[in-house]
Length: 71
Image (cartoon, rainbow, N blue to C red; front, side, top):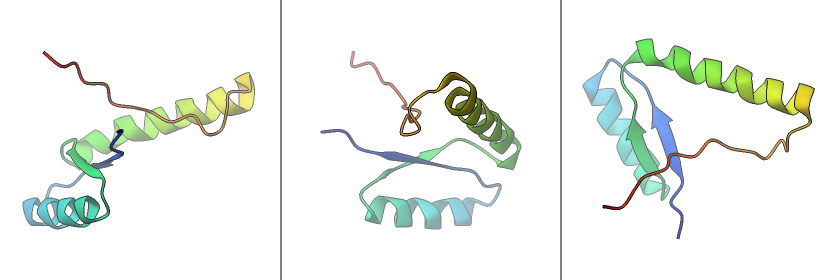
């Protein structure tokens, strides 16, 4: 079974805890990717995704996935 994940950014630890609880209550994995300074990277990934769809004809339902290796 695949568990969907939701990335979250914040400089406020209380806000991170609150959003993590809300995300997990929806059945998703809450992934902490750092402070607001890291949000720029997600914005760049989004621009790349849009470019792939518009210019290269990629499937618009393509999503980013986080891969983990079982050791």
